[in-house]
Length: 91
Image (cartoon, rainbow, N blue to C red; front, side, top):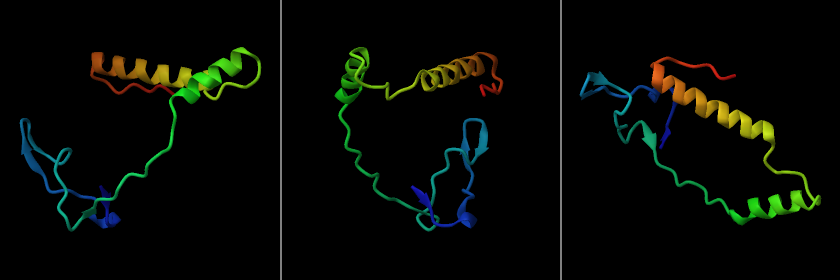
């Protein structure tokens, strides 16, 4: 769902278990439009083909260790945030 304009950002509050909230409030048709998601052509086997090529010394990894580490730090921050009920800065 896409907002029609910046002015239409605000949603009408709804009553939830803990009282009024806008977090899960549905948008009305006049403030948002639905658009199809683009189809992405992908083959999950490409990852494994890259791993084999890297092991054979014929290619560079398409996913860098720094990217993997960033995701792992994010996941650890999410777990810590859940356990402590606090916002955790991971970068």
